[in-house]
Structures are given as C-alpha cells and as structure tokens.
Amino acid sequence: MARISLTGIKPTGSPHIGNYFGMYKQAIALSDTYLGLYFVADFHALTTTPNPKDLQQDIYEVAAAWLALGLDPEKSIFFLQSDVPEIPECAWFLACSTAKGLLNRAHAYKAAIDKNLEIDRDPDYGVNAGLYNYPVLMAADILLYNSDIVPVGADQRQHVEIARDIAETFNRTYGKVIKLPEAYIPEAVQTIPGIDGRKMSKSYNNTIPIFASEKETRKQIMRIVTDSKTPEEPKDPESCNVFQIFRFFAPEARVEEVRQQYLQGGLGYGTLKQELFEHLMNHFADARQKFDTLMDNKSQLDAILKQGAEKVRSIAIPNLKRMRKAVGIDK
Image 1 (cartoon, rainbow, N blue to C red):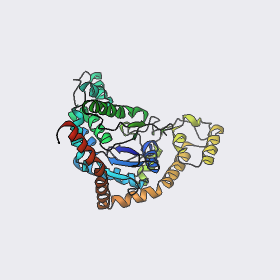
Image 2 (cartoon, helix red, strand yellow):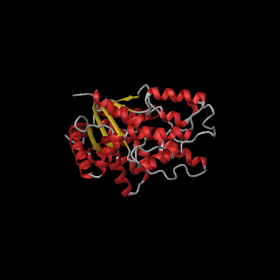
Image 3 (cartoon, one colour):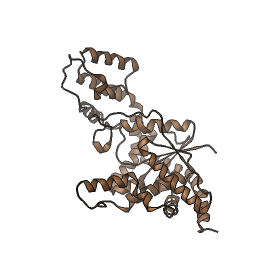
Image 4 (cartoon, rainbow, N blue to C red):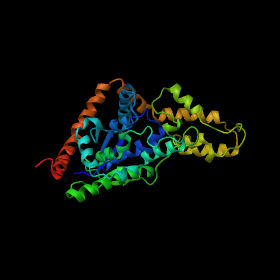
C-alpha cells in the first residue's frame, strides 16, 4: 500500500491567502507522492462551541476551498471527520493510554492557562474538557489511518510528538499495534504577512480572504498598513507590507521592476495596492469560480465527502479491530 500523508483543517472561517501558501498548496502537492488523506476536522471545531449554523457554513466553505484550490478527490481521500464513527472509539482507547501530565503540556491548554493567569483569573476559566483532551482526538485522527507523515508547521510539531508518545505507551502495554507517524516539516514554508505586518492569522483579524467578494477583497488590500512616504520618495521593499505580499502574486520580472522603482522613488503605495488586487484576482480566478459553483451545489460536496468517508473507513475499520482485540474488548 502507498505511504500515507494526513492533513486536517478545522472549519473556522473562510480560508485566506496565508492558509493557501502556508498549508493548502504544499499539502495538496504531497498527493503526487503519497496517498493523501485530507479531512475537515469538524469535531475539533466544537471546542469553541460555535454557532451550529455558522459551523455548517464553515464546513462547506472549507470543503469547497480544498476542491477549488486543486484537491482531486479521485486521486486522494477527502472526508469529514465526523463521518468516521471509528474515531471517537479510537480516541477513548488512546485516552486510556495517555498520561494527564502529557495533556497538561499541550500548547493550546497551556496558552489558555497563561492567558487566565495574566489577568488573575482561575487558571481553568473557560477551559472545557474538549480543549483539554483535543490532543487525544488529534492522535486518533493521525493513528487510526496508519499515517506515515503528517505535514505541520514547526510550531505544530508537538501535535505529532504527542500522538507518537500515546502510540508508544499503547504499544508497550498491548504489543506493537499502532504505526508511529513522522512529522513532515517543509524546509521552506512560505509565510505571508498580514495586512498589519504580523503573521497572517484569523486571530489577528489581518487576513485577505481568497473567496470573498471582489469589493471586500479590494477593501482589505487597501487597508494594508504602510508608512507615510509620498510616491516620489524612495522606499524599502523589504519592510513594506504591500511589496511583501505583492511578490507572492506578480511575475518575477515585475517584482524586480517594482523593487527598483521602490528604491529609486516614483511608485505610490495606492498604485501598488491596486496592482496587487488585480494580480490576486487573476491568480485565484479559476479557484473562485469553482468555489462559487460548489457552494451553490452543496449536495455535490456532501456526496464527495461521504464517498471519501467510505474509502477511509476501509483503512480505519481493520485498524480499530486490531485495537479492540489488543485491549480485550474483542476476542
């Protein structure tokens, strides 16, 4: 069987260009050399108790985004996490092999604790059991399908390390049942700045959505933070947020031309923002059209996700059976 690459993403709002260059583009490329498993992690989204209607919309938007940006469901396996009933059972088996101290060290839980302590609140204020236990559910996502690699950013390596720790404990107790995955961290992850210069992130409210209306997209681009230099003044391209985003979309020759215009003076920020908008619209034109078509035909999305769940369950079911037998549930 082909080696397996596993990628999941929470449905937490419309994808932005930082998601595309930092995750979507590279994850989809792995399907050329691996059997790619891609899923919408709707169970994980519940840790923030989202509005049910908003969650449904977000699920469809993330699913449509994967397909619009190039994921081929015939070549890969694309599914909804909650359509695999073996996942919660696997998570329970793994939870019983997980030390509480391991979960205490999980980044998301520690971040919530630290945030509360900063304002003299009870450390566990607002922390639900889902957030605390989410590394176990994530481990189930990774381990149930015999994943060989899990593409992650350097700051997400801990997710795979925790999954490996849990698997090793399970294997020490019950025998070698679970395959140990490896974190796959691309050497050159493309990080795109947000409109305020920080890393583009929904939590900073500084994103440029891929599939927003042209009016909204242009509005966000025009909000990119710049200094007060006039068009005639020389500018530093390396410290300019507009230029740093522009170089992801314009042809290489044009990027170099703009760099020289910046250094010499004579190019205004507003002019470059408008050109960036045009390049971005052109870059995602086909994807935006496909996204809109899919969002207008949600039954097609449902069918693709259901078909993917059936495929991935052919991997999950025998693996779960081995776990059930190992722990003594089955003979």
